Length: 307
Length: 314
Image 1 (tube, each protein chain N blue to C red):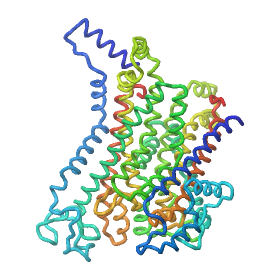
Image 2: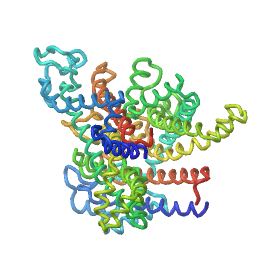
Image 3: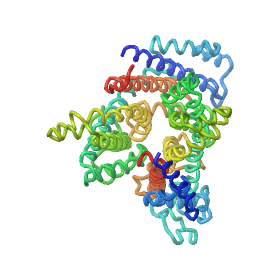
Image 4: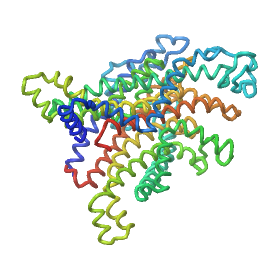
């Protein structure tokens, strides 16, 4: 097991380095710098600014300094646009919000999706099955940026039940719609995956044996069928996580929740390089870490995988 | 396997009774596809949407940039969809106008063109690059394979949407950059799928035979491996188009993709959503309708093709 984890880390670390180098090179190749204004700054001031942010050094040195600061000090440097804030400040401000509704979306998508899939498979070809299939087919054409306006239209403008945006320290009324909007399409995918793999497992010989022994259906499902049926679902959790991190940008923009997505888009529009890079690297690191956890979980559950 | 046996049986019977015409694998697949009602309905919808994108601009009296000054400032009442003559007299706005008085029908046509184009180009790049990349990796195997697939692994675990936005910010927000960015990521899954299929094909007798008579590896890949991948590739490419459309719409929804006066479904949905508190729901409704039916149609056609071309799954 340990050697498996080490081998996976050997892939994960170069991935992160690649991401850092790639985004740094893209930034470096960018026409126009963060201090380009409508009226060009005097050369002396420009030189001072570049010296302050270390932009006058050669590319390799800049990159090394950046990576060193990020890895050793966990310091993403100052923001180029908001002079009084560092990238760390911005992340500290927005990240807890994103994490809060991201966590709930993940829970809702997995729990609802899996339950729907299991119910559909157990009651195969019943109205419950058709309902679950209908929901999951419908939900796959409803990505977060389509769900968000529809939810606001129905629950804020027509029914007036929920506030159309804001965060207010994370009261539940403000979390409900972001969570539904973010989780719907992933819930649908998880439900479809669970249903098809559960159907396959339920037709297996050992399930027939278990039923022939006279075990109650509940026990057959939970003790025998569930674990192998959920394996493909677990491997989908990695991509689902990436999708939710990405989707959070839309949620933050649309619901004004104040997560990192707003900062990402605003700094993309303002060319605030250090903030974009900081957020890109942070999400990249999270993605890699999460995929690692999923892989280890998978290897631990599935006896077929040898490491 | 079943198909091969069936084809072989067809051949054998054709030998004995020349009157019976043999059916190719593709003909078989076509028959199976057209038996699937949902898939055929999807195909019809796709053709209609494509016709709408191609010829819609001739139906409207307005261009997508023209402003109807007579509705400006009173879009809620004057800019409503109408089939016959609007406030301007004989030039109706079929889908109403947007908040700036531009004809929404013309803009939806234009958005449909861009969204469909992004989807198709993304899928085409995936088909070409992904298939060749995956087939090469799978056929050569060994170290070449592990290096090539490790590269794909690394690229896949990068949160590409952020990198794509980075690219758009740095090199300017244009449709061309959007194509480049989407092309960069779209082939990864395809490469994996093509590789997996190649691994199972390359041990078949016909490849061995080609190898034995001294055919070069690049020719084997081109002549013997890739044609046998086509079924899977087509199915996956059909399912890839909607996800490319979703990516593009996602970015345009954030205002980082297609720029004015051009537009796309994502940009239109975003604009419509920002106006809906004024009761001008048609601005959200029409683009959303086209977005949803097209995605549905692609999913149904993709599922139908999978059932038709991939006998394993039946």
